[in-house]
Length: 532
Image 1 (cartoon, helix red, strand yellow):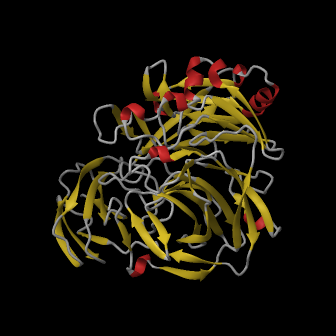
Image 2: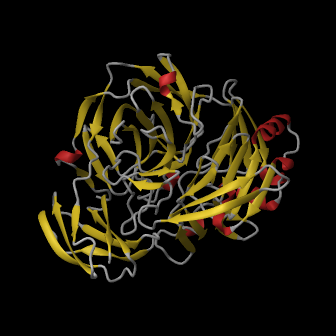
Image 3: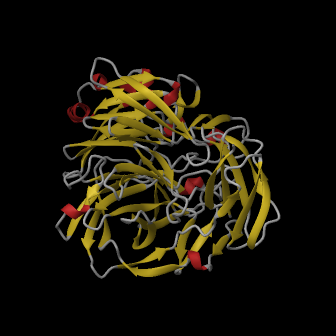
């Protein structure tokens, strides 16, 4: 069989039916919008109930053949305005814009963030006529959202509503752009130049960011500027792209973000499963918890229940290494398209749990889609919906638009990307109160740990001991505090039960060393060691 399906029977993978900590049914209702095509992996903003949609792609999942992947003819060269209340749309071509702007704004997987009336767009990947090749754009572009929306509707010139600057720090695609306080955070992603090649033949160059790039943006004057640039690197925990970045309210009331899953791990082409929290004070890998049911960029909605101090995150379809079939949690390492709608919840004590919702997406869809929140609802500055301040028993939280739809879970693996297409559907997303709701709960706890002794150590060899919950592959990474990898490899001759070994740290020439063990390609555990 091309797809190896594994049913997990181990106790820590079994789901339980628990009284819901989120007493709402999710209801999806398709909405017809005249003139809106299928799109995925685009950027959006909104103003006074109207959406602005820029970039992305008009075809489905990219082909496996380099000559056929990401054809320029399928770049989205039109910008759309949508009035969801009247179900109307308007459009304007990017081709009237200066070359640098029009090329970037038809790219895919741009990093974007709306800050008041400004939409900031960074990077993105597409065929560039100027370069005569595919590239990741090194631009930061600002868009005047209200005036551009008005101009597109009126059919008047649009050029004056854009500004752009260039710097290689912005050459990122597949990451996410966020803001905490006055600082912007360009999180993860990679620089990919040339033609995609699944066999890793030299038709491209690729460099993961492995970083959070922090800076301020000044959009107030005659020209666009950025300043206060800082880069935080971690080649182990920040090696992420094509993930969901979740705006969060943390248990202490602090606003920040969480990296949810994403691809690809260093030693294996599989998703990361554990999240990473991002706050003003730093980033914090949450390796004690794995999220199984959503592993790729999709539509997501984030809601905070202040009364119970619970942070809820909803995920709509997409692609996942895990899904439910006949009540069993299935692992498929080809990471197929799924219909799953799931939720993670962070509780007052900081613990995390994952739930499968009783509703599914109507088809295999959702990858590369966006959730556009209902801004008429009470919400925090980072767009998290204030659930406790909503008294209605049913209410629209926003809309899902676009993404990739597929008629086969394994279209990419089977080299049948012609079975995929860009989804033109808009779904209204409503929550309906249901106090009797119960949902399957997945135990995402990490069952592995290890000890290091002595720590601190006066030499380059330490003793490591770990108890294997079951027989599995074990990889290791040795890294330094500046985020660089000194050594990586696989631990051989391990077995279920207690394992002990001498472990050399000679490859890391620094006072502080971080040892990370990866158990079974899914459970990460890191320990800091001090070398005296």
